[in-house]
Length: 296
Image (cartoon, rainbow, N blue to C red; front, side):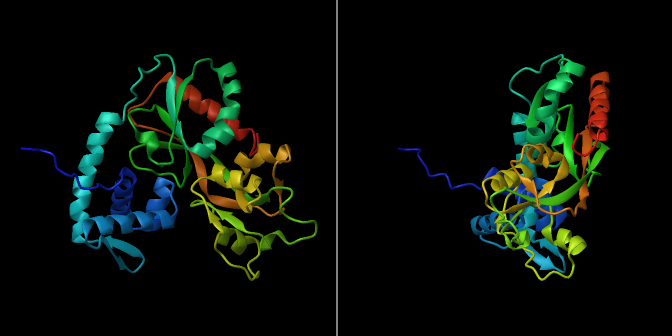
């Protein structure tokens, strides 16, 4: 007698993370910001889960998305499953480097800000960083697998101690060939991310301009938005600290003298249990780097 049986398809891990965040925050937009996704991506994941569950998981109540009884039941088991996965895979498989720190940051910060500064860090503090983990999750700095993190967001995250590193300014950029001489760049396609709001930029710099608020292309990460701009796909709303090297080399050009201070900032985060002279040295070095100037 055969014991073979068909295993029903299971939801993806990403869908389960979306469910947990959306239930906890009662907002698709807030869940999207936390996970580094777009609002549309969160909505699609919820739709897929509702199809899988055969029941609605959220109901709109004013500006909030309230979880249904089915969602509340499912998220209890989901949190337990995520906890088990975290215990199994949340720690590095390779042995930790005893002499250096393991830090976490976002893809954009790692690629456009931190890695170009690693030679200076290694010169000032040899061996201080042993490994860099890249994650878009805002609470990644709270993981037991890392000693500290650099995050971009509102600050005040639960489970971590936060220290403000620096603020940020936003302005539009594009590939040099995208905008013809004398043309109005504001008519070009716009590239959006979950964090940078075109609507707010226009409200502060050109409130009387008749324009559409949406972006022609939505991407989940600031570095990807700049990559798309380099390819001539549209105008990106760039973060000054990240885009500065691309402006200096002429790969991208700034399209407006106007800049808007972002509502989000850069933060140094660490689990409350992580204290050491190495972490203090890293924090001091980061503060000095940010104090050198927006484009330093």
